[in-house]
Image (cartoon, rainbow, N blue to C red; front, side, top):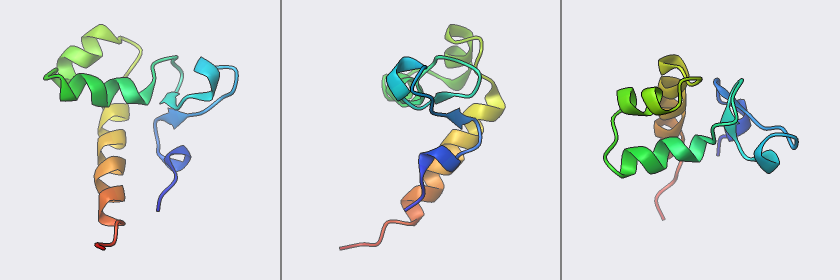
Length: 75
């Protein structure tokens, strides 16, 4: 299974948000993207609410998440 730390656009630093995975160069947790999308927000709305996050970062994270699902072997 892929490690999120290898995902472009993501960083993890114990000094930022207690080591939570965040968008590179921000304090915005990656988890916030998935929570907001789940609640019906669009990518454009998310970028408006979190101006330090770029579309490129979001696309890289969504692609990484999609690719990691392909690594799951059915039981």
